[in-house]
Image 1 (cartoon, protein in one colour):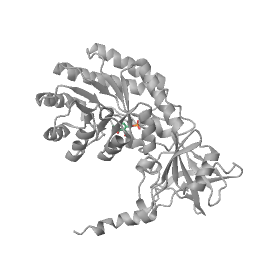
Image 2 (cartoon, rainbow, N blue to C red):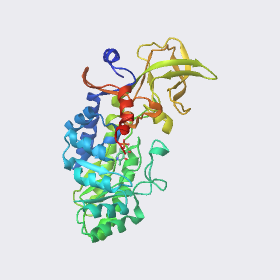
Image 3 (tube, helix red, strand yellow):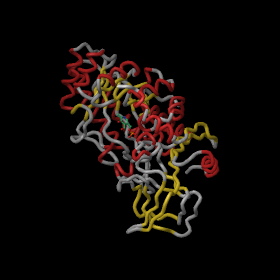
Image 4 (cartoon, rainbow, N blue to C red):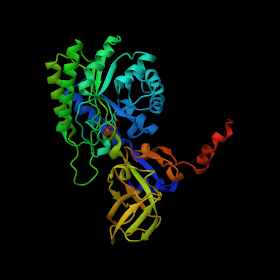
Length: 412
Ligand SMILES: Cc1ncc(COP(=O)(O)O)c(C=O)c1O
């Protein structure tokens, strides 16, 4: 929970809604993951998934913790380079990549995971990447919600594993001699065994591909997906056990298929920033309708996870004690009935202007925010040991309006 004194100071300085990230928690999460994996397989490299949270200060913290990045768009590549990540630490994993995306990837990323054989044809027309790596759909996948399940027969990502050998053969015939392999089968998983089993499957797929080609892979990337609890009942992912089980299968398969010591890559997003952030909002209206509603100044435009996946974020009211309860739906101001954070939640009796803090909002919060209904995107603040070290205010209306009409000034 965010420190009350910092929150009070922030509320005097910044208009709600805003996200606050705790640098110490981000650093701790980086070390937990790093220590766990390097203990069982020292050649592990971690690429933080920029899509989870791209706040410049957050990226600097992650860079200083020694992680690389995984990018999914030209914008993410550009900001990663601007943050100071070396090309060799920047990976690109897109899907249905356009020639423009691939051109950016070739320029800024040392590592590229291609989504399909058609992506290979497109990139080859520009230039052959130093290492050819394909994202494989291993036929299985699991995520906290259907929308974040990215492997299996209904997933739009990657090459079905049955077609993977053909893709690598094509790359080989085109002159590629250095290879990697990648998968990302789902997000917010909390069971260590899931990671071990999917790793095992990918290793067997890699085994059959690379033995057929007579080469060994330089890296094997098992993606992200390391989850965090969003409710009191969920048990946190045991990362130590996850690393132990994954590395056990990884090493056993490396010897079985005579791979030597390829780099094991992982791409965590949520695990690094999810529990390090909160969203601070203010009550703007209360209504007794067929149900009780409490409206806040953040909405699905600020934090879309509840509307998109039916995700739940625990709420806290730091300045209101739990005297007198009201069961209420908490909603935003967007003109959609899916703009509801939660139904029927017991909260202290709140007044207009009171603060509600949404927990665990540090991943897929601000990066998924939008200007829908013409609402400004939220501010972002980073604190470190009780000090504010980064502050970006929420978007200014005047700037939004000016940007909207910028096009008018370019004569057709
Ligand atoms: C290719 C890729 N890698 C890594 C991640 C990070 O996932 P997570 O935040 O679940 O660790 C994602 C998330 O969608 C992704 O698409």
